[in-house]
Length: 281
Image 1 (tube, rainbow, N blue to C red):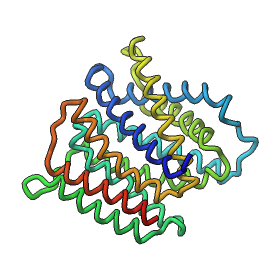
Image 2 (image 1 turned 90 degrees about the vertical axis):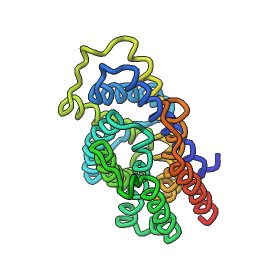
Image 3 (image 1 turned 60 degrees about the vertical axis):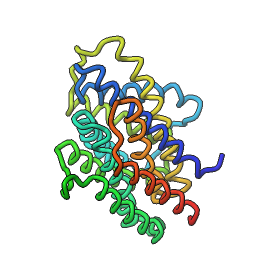
Image 4 (image 1 turned 135 degrees about the horizontal axis):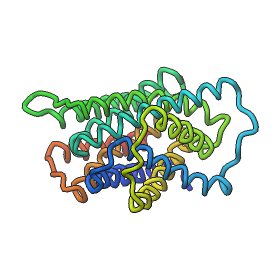
């Protein structure tokens, strides 16, 4: 398979995952972001433990630097996921969709600071144009509209950027599936300690949907990690700018959000930018 397809697969899986997540929030109103976050990681681990015997291999040893980096990834993932799911629980996807674009933009800047091989003027220029389009698409009455839900999404973007930098360094010692498994184990332990869910409100009919979400999350993250290793952070993450576009389309179709002319225009421009960058690269 052509490796350039990996981030596109991740984009589709991530967009479907987020849309289903929001649909579950709307349907299972008793579940807060705490229960949802814990259950989705339980679903992810269930899927990973089914796959590891066939596609993974436990590491024999890790350097001390890798061990510390792994715990750094876990800590950033715990905080990032708490912020992320609190944000989508409190905002419409169509409202946070433009701000999800900040995740790839911030990650590209952070990655280029730590890795010289991630620097590319083509990606910088395209990212700048995409950020201008982002700002324009979300202006209401000549002012950018910020809420606490949107601010938490922006904070998540910063956490994701630093986590991606650590992930790239760990991929030299761990396979993508083993790295994701160890990350999720750390996260579910951390969530159990610091963001304890009320499992008494979880019912049997909640479990199957989280198995589906787990499968989508594994597909998205394993392809993402593999693309990080083979393509590099910047090119992979820039393709992720398509994710908010696809999320917006799915939220309008399945979640009764509304078409907005500015968002449609912004989505078209961003899609063209992604295509042009990949043609140049």
